[in-house]
Amino acid sequence: MIGKLAPRQYQGVMMGSWMLVTGLASLFAGDFSGMIPEPTGTTAVATNPGYAKLFAELGAGSLAVGIALVVLIPFLRKLITDKAAMPRRSASRCCSVV
Figure 1 (cartoon, one colour):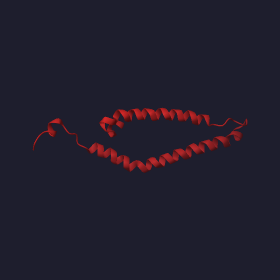
Figure 2: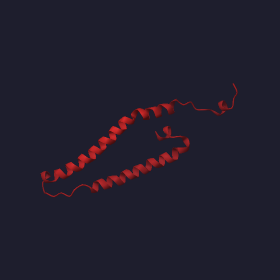
Figure 3: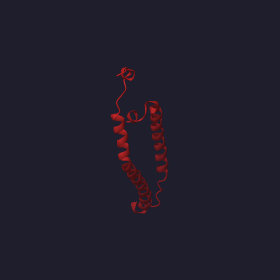
Figure 4: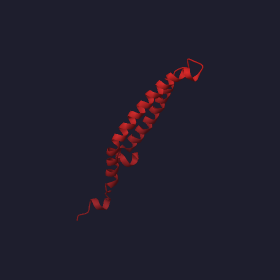
C-alpha cells in the first residue's frame, strides 16, 4: 500500500517511517506492560480494580484512534482512487506531436 500511495521519490522514506513506527509501537508495548499494577491481594477480586482501570484507559485510547481512522476513510479512499486512476506516461507518448 505504501508503494501505491507514496510518490516514487518518497517510497524509501515512507517504508523507513513504517519500520520506525513499528519499532516505536514495540517500545510503547513495553511501557504499557510496565504500567500493570502489582497484585495487592491473593484473589482476583482484590486485583481486578487496578487491571480494570488500566484496560479501560487503553480501551478508551484505542477507541479514540479507531474513531479518528473511521473519520479519515473518505480522505484515504480519495487518495487511493486518485493514485489508481492516474494514467502512466510512456516515453514514446511524452515526446510525440499529435
